[in-house]
Image (cartoon, rainbow, N blue to C red; front, side, top):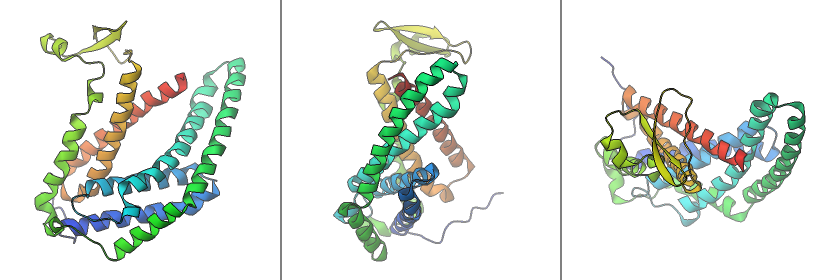
Length: 281
């Protein structure tokens, strides 16, 4: 029999404060090294902290009353700026280490030219990051959020026991994820229902759908620009919900953690698709 030791915090408000404190401190921890611009991992960790902070602001919206300067839209602005720089780091790393070694010499020369342009873009992106981290709005965000952590302001439902209301907090987020149109890319309901074999996908060719049987892992599906946007949006939604769910692993068992692992895998697969789309452009 597995005994689960639950945290000492009991109320929804207690847990909200704990989440904000954790992600806020993670963000602050990596900020100085991000400004030095020496290690891409520091940027990655600060971006993760900022995104999880935003997920907490969104997920606990019914529970907390945040100052205007520290609400999720303000946090999102910073996270997007960090994300622009991080995306370039990821792309440059992939080109250098995954793609370039497999190219003929002449194509490597051409790729080097393209990477020079990307590095110029990265320098501009870093200037934006440096500027926004020194901007009054970001400094105010940090100040007001710290003030809130010192003296949290909650709504009435914050006093409810977290174990009783946690499903009600998570289910709307998960339902929204399951209803995302990105899950339907390459799938047409009518064809799937009339098929006796479940190992089918639909391939869109010349604006028409064709049923394609999956025989192994070496298959491909043509998708439109709109479908690419849906998949990119789905990836962001998977990440957002995963961040929110990861706050509550202490309250559930190994099955819950397995679902989080599945979501991380899905996020990575969708990321590979997005990387391919960027490279094609």
